[in-house]
Length: 101
Image 1 (cartoon, rainbow, N blue to C red):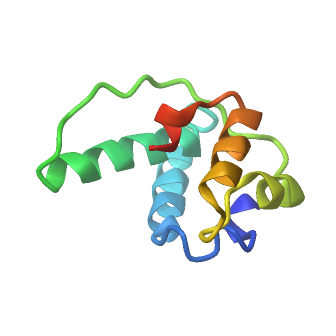
Image 2: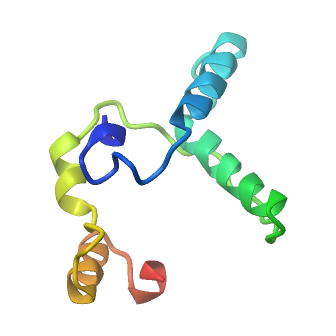
């Protein structure tokens, strides 16, 4: 999956926690909650617990049915890409300079 592409390999750790939550949720109510929603809630709660702001997470994200290993490798900016390359990669998927920051 995209989690294991070279661009993502060490960018975020703790996916096993998300996987464990997903397993527990699936056992309780299969097919209702996506990993994407779990990750969004976990990110929000992490920010809140570290003293940051709270915001409402809009739920209803859908997980992809197929992983795109090469697509994620090509679309994600590399850690040492120049700024213009990073901006171009964001713009290619409909994001802007504010999204980069």
